[in-house]
Length: 474
Image 1: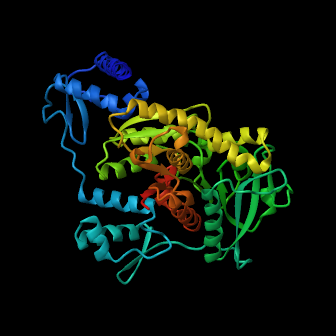
Image 2: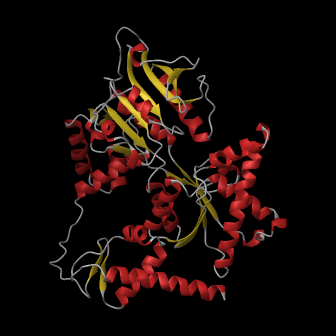
Image 3: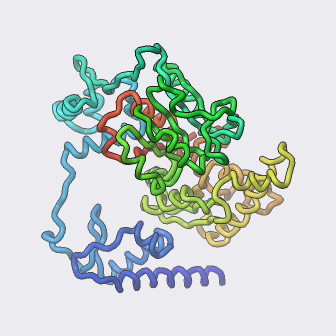
């Protein structure tokens, strides 16, 4: 009876999507809204949208052109859509930029040999060298013999052999700092390592969310004028909810400022985005992590997945879901939107139990949420037990795996347990041998230092520079 209800409900949603599209003003040759736009407008899954589009195609109301989208009409005259082919130069430029964003090509190391790059990008050696020489002419690359390097000049204050960089992270009211995640600790460690390698002196400050004050590690309030020898600044907004005081502190800075932007892209203050000496970097927010994970799964022959999140009152959880859906996968979502992050569960735990029990209690709260979501997924997908389960982070995957092993919960026998994949690529994912998306903190730090030591047009073409990661198999 439940399956009949589910089928009836999906048909109803599908028919509403078709009706919505048919009621839009259109004529033959007009392009339909993208799948992503339809998902957002109709608040449904990619699978349901794709099913509705397939029916409209079968009914000959629309036609689909590979790589261009769906259009109204049974057929489309060739003159309606001009054939737009990516030139060799465009393809080469896009591939090079993507390798830069993924950290495959790093500013601190020479580029691979030209013959190797020509093979990688499937172009002739002559075409590649013309492309690289073009980047030399605009100052992005330098050339020595046949070897190419990124242009960079360490920013130096002549009066101090160790040039000073200001490094700001969140802190408590007395300037103390305790990392809440592996990624936060990795970022701190990598910044110090990179600064040491480049002979920069780091001055560590903290932004306190409650007071909005910038303090040193002794809790003393500081001003920008206290650092006349500073030649740059690195700002972390991770877990900083009131980020405006942090940005305002450096508003008058004449030196380069690099911001690790750990918030939705659309809330980044335009005033600071327009500043030529400021560069914003994003690695975890937006739809790209979901899209990259979706592409990885599709390359493995996966077409359909379940998505689990007990933190769906957050933009990052929603973005990862949309990214998975727009990658082309059929996605069934099992989410709970009461909370926005793992820290919300910990805040509840701190009010109820002793400090040493907070982690255990918070995990128990998450497990209760996930048990309900998992049982719902199993009830709805009994005929498809092998659909991979994509988890919003490694912690969720760990809890689900734990539930598989705890037979008294009646969750699911281990022999039919789902294939899990997650986001974060934490140490836990290695212990579980779990494929997980790595947000590429190393490339993030590499490019932050590059933007400080060599501000260039490379970053000016994007308001927020995205760092691309990849799924790491274990």
